[in-house]
Image 1 (cartoon, rainbow, N blue to C red):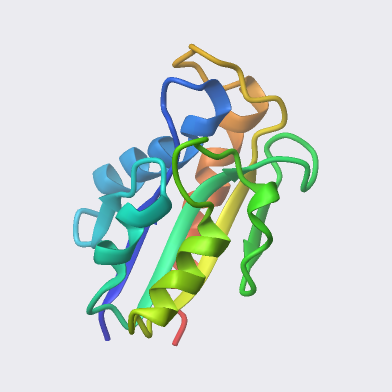
Image 2: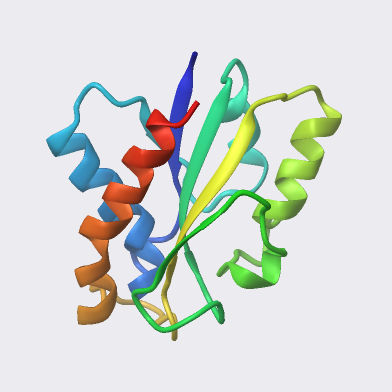
Length: 146
């Protein structure tokens, strides 16, 4: 079974960079994982999902809980739950399009509540930084789930 972890977000937008922080931690501690940088999401996610049986997307969420809260979504929430680029599709729309073009991977999202997303910062808030180990644990659980 081919399982890929895709980390999304913008590391120069404060807490929106938490997906990258999780990717860096997992890459250091679990080099055997198939984990890739999904950038800001959108259309670029589709080729990253091709050929996979299961995909675990890691991204910041907004308005889904307290800053630093980690949640796993088997049903992808609407794109309003994710910080998004004004120039591309949100995660929910991208996944719908992926299905239309034949991507059949099962998808789960590990979301880390980012709260207020600060522009032009490469720092995570203390609450979000503290959530990285929990997010890593949840990603590993999802990677191991059949």
